Structures are given as structure tokens and as C-alpha cells.
Image (tube, rainbow, N blue to C red):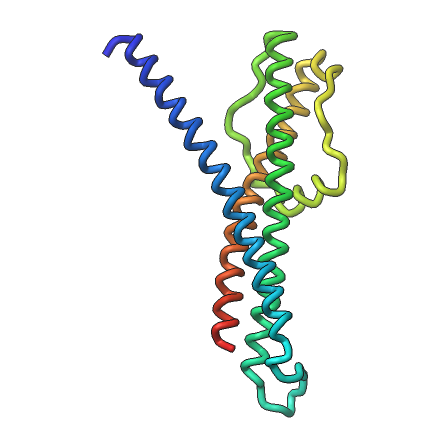
Length: 194
């Protein structure tokens, strides 16, 4: 195989990778939205049929009413499904926003100073995903401004912090969506047991 043929194959594989990466992100968004909507629909349905179940009493001297117990568990699982869907959507939006900013920063650094910014592995073993998510929602994100492009050390530090934050948000998106699927399944199972 010649170098020319090798470069053509690499370009073709890169194009395929870009296409399937786009498909995966679109499907993730669709799946999150679908299960959030199903969670809301199930929650609405459960509230609508509330009168079919007896009064909810917590009394240690009474036998357990399993129909009501499973109804309440289904209701709780549905609420958790919706909450996890909202966490998935917002963390994904922040991840996309930060990633877009990182690409802008790479472009500016290359254009202004011909600097390559880090692309390697990011160690997340000491990072809290939930803590990072709360931090992102409650504290203003430390964006890289034009004046930060002057100092390579400051730029690399801020850049790596944003990369870490984006990666943590991406992981949180996937984890919360997986939990969303599990709670949706449990909600339907508990309702089926009523």
C-alpha cells in the first residue's frame, strides 16, 4: 500500500468516525428526551388513576397493602426518571457548550500563537461527577477570554480545567441516562405488580 492510499483510507475512516459520532450524539439526545417524556406521561397517568387505590396509611399494626405500596414505588420511580432525564439534558447542554468553547480556544491559540493545546488523556479518578455538575450549575464557568491567550501557562491551566469539566459532564450525562432507563423499567415493573 502506498502512502497516498494509506492517507486516503485514514481520511475515509476519519469521515466514517465523524459520521457515526454524530449519529451517536443525536441518538443519545433522542433517547434522553424519549424516556423523559415517557416518565412524565407515566407520572401523569399514575396521578390520574390515584383514586383506584386505597388510602395511603403508615401503620405498623395494619397489614401491608401491596397494591398501594407498589403504586407509591412506581410513582417515586417515575419522579426519579424525570429528574434523571433533566440532569442528563442539562449536563449534555453544558458539555456541548464547553466543548464548543474549547474548539474556539484551540483555533484562536493556533491562529494567534501557533500553540498546540493538550489533547491527551485526562485523569478523572479524583473528580466528583455530581460535585462537578453542581459546581457547573451554581458557579459561573471560568471561560477562556482573549487576554488568556497571551500566556501559554495560564491558557493551558484554564484549558485543561475546562476539558476536565466537559469530560465529567459527558460522563454524568451517560450515567444519569443509564439510571433513567433503570428507573423507568422499575416504575413500569412496580406498576405491573399493583
